[in-house]
Length: 377
Image (cartoon, rainbow, N blue to C red):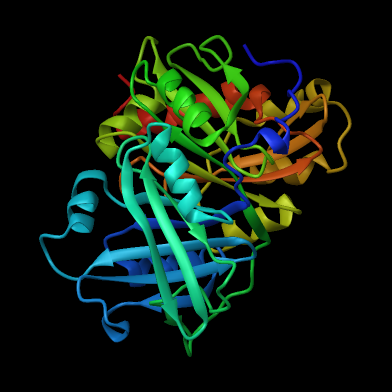
């Protein structure tokens, strides 16, 4: 069941793994150049940095796009037989690296390894004329990794090995996306508590919310979820696992098509969700829709809100309230050919929770999409 109030996060003095925030997300994609163009034109990101043949790389290329505090690194292989290519062949396009900004990447790595993490990358220093960056990395669920990034002695555009990426063509205006609010991982049957323990023991996170199959279920499908947060609350990782239902849940569909555990969706924050969603829709981003009947009782359920209901209904934006305030949220359809990764747009007006009151309507909307895909059986 969902806890009625959010517990206070643990004292900073007890936080053995201090993390400043999300540094970047790296997606392995089949065509990084086209993916960068998509995230610019559809989602309002700007060109930032590039690494590839022109910077001395022989096996891959990466385009970095930025919007406020959100940095996406889009990486593709340049030849066959690479690990990146194998990853894409198995999983499709998706998140490989969730990079965490830390003050000391060597300490973070050593501490995580001592506490049982599997090594992905030993601490290494990368330098150029703008200073140095230290990075290290560990595995988490599936093939997803966390890279610790220490950049206090670096003043360059992104990091060593990258050059500034400037394009003579279109750099669109921002759509108002600010930062990564949370990121959801889908794990296998009965693996949620294993990964909850991992984040508690290895990274010092705490479980701030739990949802069971009574909270997150419809007539046909169910799932369970626990929300993990780091000490300062800037990093939140809900972890989902399937639960028994009459038909195949969205988590099972994801695991089938991603062919393993991985990042299900990236939630990005905005200060004005109505304007942001209008702009995203005008640029071709597709969103899940709930029935219009959802809006007939929305104020009875959440009380008075600042926004008019009419534009929320028109755009399909959902509303929920907790003890701290309310939130507005909407979910895109998958942004890849496989029904795997998608985005959430969220605006918090005090609320610190994750929209429990919307779960049923949202998951019924997802089931309608699954039915069209022929995967709800």
